[in-house]
Length: 503
View 1 (cartoon, rainbow, N blue to C red):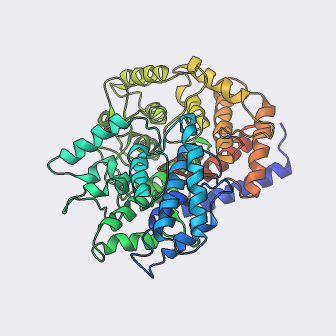
View 2: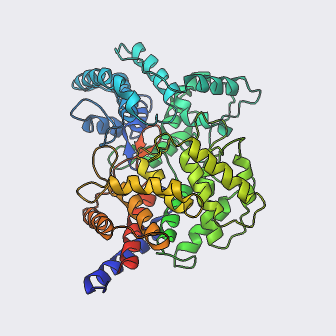
View 3: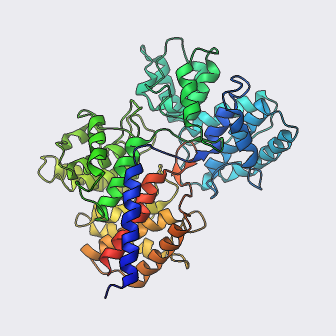
């Protein structure tokens, strides 16, 4: 197809936006969420004048019409735990007469939500311990709230007891530290829970829980951390910082799109930062202030660093190898499909490694075992199956084309009339970017994809990029959240690949 002047202008605009994005990567910014804001709001009476009254005000302004708090698209675990945390905060720290009406509306909403929790593909992080702890606190405050059904409750109890029975009780080495707000009554004096920035595992809510359990004035670094990350509107992000995740995942999307090279201005300093934080023994996690590494971030960081010419060894993945699959975190209660897909993609550049074939077989066999419906996978880190199913096309190509084609068919057949894709009831720019990215790769490397499908997807993304409407929270933390940098990189990368591939 002949390239028009308008297409050239659009590509130049994309390049400028990509340059601006690269310049701003590394801060690890995440929009405020109701769950973490509620925990910090509880600090307002305890630490007057520190700005946490703004968190209370944010909760008052951001209750949904149905009485709930949480993301704009409904994921029931997100709405349940966010609403529970919000009404506890307003009952405990609220002082306005109207707060009680907000609490009652939230209380009523919880009874409607509790029967719908089973409809979610995945729980939010720490839901078994967090929901139980908040339900107890709500009852102590005189609230009438339902006790939710719990998946993986037995595994969580076992995991918690193992940490509490450990002679050194190294909370920082456990993923449970991320949910410390629910376990703070189990803390002993002298337990190590803080990272170097004063946070508890870079989690604002866990840090707030720690402060609620600490004598006033004994945790100034944690107090300063929360003041530093509070946003102008009073809200608190779901995690802060996520600097390593932001850099690695954003660069990987742009790399896949062909929008950057290792020596593109601004890229090398970002990779140098990843390399400084890289551990040859366990890889990396999502934050430079986190003691626990995971295979998902490690695989993406490995891929970017290897592309950039850094001497990373695939031997790192042995750290995450299990008997019949790879773990995302050691001690996790259920496997992460996306971690397997990211690892499979990383291994495509390591064919020389002696365990390459065996690891590929282990991953593919695990993916088949986890394939419950023959069309798509869901993943515990994201509310949309398009996130993991889209990434699977490029990772599985020439390794298991039949498995990849089944994901391809599901993506193609589920495009919405507006040209986008969306799993929670409406199309989003993020999900559409993942699908377009996958279809373009398949179109250029394997088989032709109907051009009209990709044209409609690109039109949807262009419209939403112009309106700056691509910030719907879909990532699963303790509530749904939105990592701005990686998502914008996916959107810009998909549009850049479309403009350079099909014209």
